[in-house]
Image 1 (cartoon, helix red, strand yellow):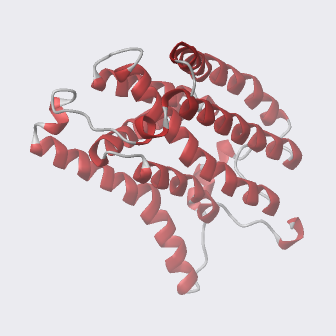
Image 2 (cartoon, helix red, strand yellow):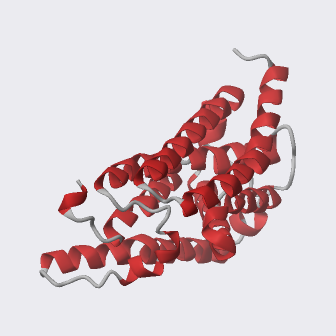
Length: 247
């Protein structure tokens, strides 16, 4: 059992790492990857991401505990605009559903439909992601590593940016308003995706806010984890498969 003061110190250091160190590393590592987006360097980048995500998540669980991170039961007073107004909840649920359809169901459904009907794919979605080609998987080896990256992001980023951040900011050691804590955690989540540019950071922050709302509505991290991992994994369906010679 970790001493309470040690656990608190670990939480402070973890928050500073997520807020400062991880974005700075991103600013340093991303330009290097852009200059040399070789498969070897890209896989090294994937390994680094997975390593720090899992280490940070283990520290979060060790310092806070499993249940406080993976479950939440806010009282209506904590976030009254969401829990005390049925119409707001319905709107939020509809927005989350639309987000899932647009980001996952539609692109994956189109891929499946075209495969079943033997129709050629234009990969227009992949073309829209051209600016991120230095980061996204291209070879079969990179695609296999991308599975681990996606699962790690789903489990660990939800643990850190939803579970840990909301507990740290709202419950202990800070006692911020839950809505404010959710906004801050979403912004920090966006800043940890600087490689996507300003538009990508904003979009990721909005995604983080929706994931946080899903966490609050369901009371646990299971659905946000699954949805997050599936959103990242869908890239394997959207992106053009590599040539057989790249195996």
